[in-house]
Image (cartoon, rainbow, N blue to C red; front, side, top):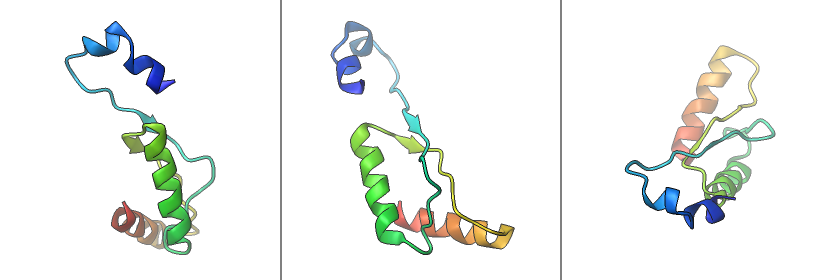
Length: 75
């Protein structure tokens, strides 16, 4: 879909870049599965995402903060 949009006149006349924000379908576990998360991040980047509204696997506020830190290191 993005490839087709990039070929349009409307895309060519944009004066600002377009952010494409996607959300992962399953919660990510960057602290427990870093290789899988890297693979998922690469997948979303290949789809054209410029940002990810990440859902994280967590069971407490402390765990959530740990997961956010781990995700930041991977990204």
